[in-house]
Image (tube, rainbow, N blue to C red; front, side):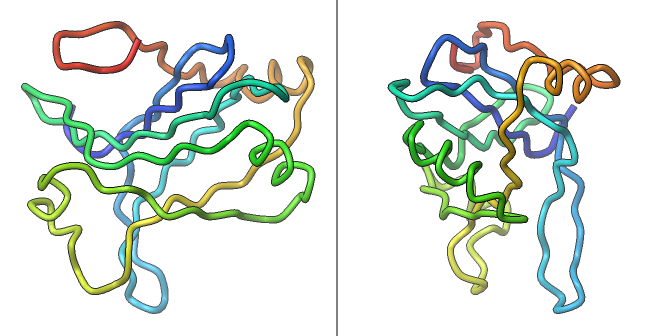
Length: 145
């Protein structure tokens, strides 16, 4: 199905996971954003490579990567230890499809905001018991391994 999805590729031994298509929302200040309500357990350990967050614009035929964010493992772990409600980072735009979607508006650069928590194996199992992230499969459209 169409829409924007986020693919998260850990820099260590963890498997990539992706969200369902985001839901378009508007906040009280009339700012548009996409909501991805899934809990995505990501395996990150000190010494791992960066975790890459990729935004894909999906339609019936193609899944084009339109933005990325690469975060070093140590920075993700530090932010998770801070226990802040949300953290955000600017996305790096790729190609022209972002603007074609209407994402080039005057609201500043696009960003990714998320809540980070440290979780042991028991917590991860509990969080994912009602929803299992879709495991990525190599496809002709160029999704990462």
